Amino acid sequence: MDRAHRILKSVFGYSEFRHHQADVIAALLAGRDVLALMPTGGGKSLCYQIPALLREGTGIVVSPLIALMQDQVDALKQLGIRAAFLNSALGAADQRHTEAALLAGDLDILYVAPERLLTERMLDLLDRAPVALFAIDEAHCVAQWGHDFRKDYRQLYVLHERYPTVPRIALTATADPRTQVEVIEQLKLQEAAVFIDSFDRPNIHYTLSEGQNGREQLWRFLERTHPRDAGIVYCLSRKKVEDIALWLQAKGRAALPYHAGLADETRRLNQQRFLREEGLIMVATVAFGMGIDKPDVRFVAHLNLPKSIEAYYQETGRAGRDGARASAWMVYGLQDVITLRQFVQRTDAAEQFKRIAHHKLEAMLGLCELISCRRQALLAYFGETLGEPCGNCDNCTETPQTWDGTLAAQKAISCVYRTGQRFGINYAVNVLIGKDDERIRHNRHDQLNIFGIGVEHSAAEWRGIFRQIIARGYLDVELEGHGALMLTDKCRPLLRGEATLALRKPSLPKERKEKSGSKVPTLGTGDKTLFDALRAVRLDLARDHGVPPYVIFHDTTLQEMARTRPADLEQMHHISGVGELKLKRYGLRFIEEIAKYPWKRD
Ligand code: ADP
Ligand code: ZN
Image (cartoon, rainbow, N blue to C red; front, side):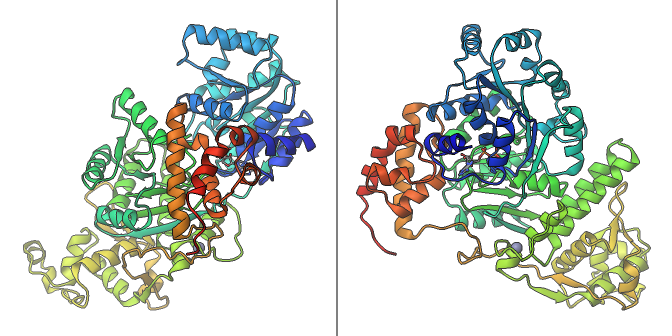
């Protein structure tokens, strides 16, 4: 392990192992199989990269993310590691060259797509080449009912049978226990050492709100919190993706669309630009997803409700992999709830599957309507306990305003009941505010004593009240027809006056307060200027080398430089993320830039 520590500092420029990295590395060095579960950004790659450098032979990394292999290899080369990849994107000559290097033992790490690995040609090569270990990345792809299922992953147990003495490590950021069991069974990892880390992402600030006009709210959020940062905006439909991308462009932000309806070439190009340029916003459906390992995604915004907490956590997890401050921001509307429910209802899946899907959506809504710490609830959902409120979510930094909505809820529910549970929200609202409406008159609902008993709230306020009581399960929305409301069992105690109901006050999400409880350091204004200058230097270098900027240095590394202003190579070497090779290559260039900005206290 001493050697592992030395490599951590000299090659990667880090002084300490994180999470279970040291345990995982020790197990692999001892020749054991490993299953490692770590949150996104937790540092999974080091777990196999360091043993691959220390053990004899090449570390074979199985990954479904073909589009990213080139960047991953470039990043390793920047550290002085001998890396290569084999996938369908490679020409015949390059392929032969890489295969020869593998046989000669001249590679530290080789990335291979699963379908390629399983070919007889590749297995035959591996029979003859020295192999240090097999790393199976994104191991949850083996789970049949998961969202990223890959057929080829099911065959990977072959590695176990054919190379019983080569240690294997399976890695994933999927927290769900059912997936874990499937990974162990399918990959035959019964003997493996299992390491599970906390799934908390302390640097991510969560904001969830319900409301109309998500677009305007998004704009305010971007202007206030991320005026120049790169991020992802998720939408439910392709059309909305296109609209929002155009709208952001018209507002002067660099934004690109990404969805499954675009030509392959366009998608590839847009993804490439997102990785290589600074400050680009990707507006996307969930088709833009797994393996976006750009570490400096500063925000993930949702303009629609995700279908489950798992999906929400995975999507927001793409923010802030570098550990610097990042935002997960969402605004959703009632229409999302109805659309998602109808979507589940209309699939021809088994009843049991539909029930689970509904249940997951309800849990997601529960998170949205929560009045207490979001992170505590999120982690609890994944079976983890966080003792204290986090201090870094909207509910912690600005206590949500609530009001006693008991009477309003009673009125709303009675109205649904008295009108026969046959109408949707708009109808019920019109009855409550006593609107002169032809349909209401025709049904003689203007004769009911609940007609006009809700004039103390506006129609918009009533719609918000309905959203919340639906979200909390007091009313159901009929999914087959046109959204008629129906009472649930949960109504009874409320109607009898045995329970009260606190509702969230509708309020626009406010600017995030910087004095929040997050432990992630922020930059003063003077440091920010320098940070921007360092980013410009980084972009120049990245262009010269034809790599994404974060391959040169991460935001966190530049931020530390801006805060501590190293004046020589020795001081520079203390910065986290500055390994020996990068120190030699880029150290002076950044020191020169820093020297132009003398210390100034804010
Ligand atoms: P993931 O678990 O999502 O695959 P990565 O392996 O990409 O995470 O690591 C996330 C980031 O954290 C990378 O930029 C990596 O260099 C950095 N990192 C990993 N281990 C450490 C460490 N021990 N100290 C500091 N930074 C680390
Ligand atoms: Zn909190």
